[in-house]
Length: 83
Image (cartoon, rainbow, N blue to C red; front, side, top):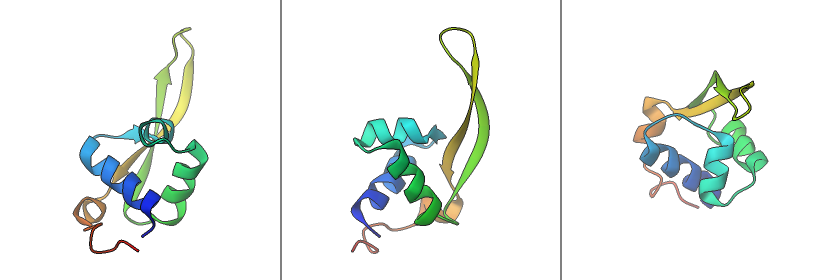
């Protein structure tokens, strides 16, 4: 696994709650599209995207996808798989 992939997995493990890609990107200093790409390609099968909706400060709503790890993802030893 690449360093950014490990960082995303570890962040989601530590957060222990669903986060959207923008939250993960901001916390890790990555671009949102980088987090989306990691989740699509490298974390495939280890995580899920759950559709959700958030209320914005102006009262409107926005559709988002929450990221979370599967049990397999939560149990992945990222130290053993590091490149």
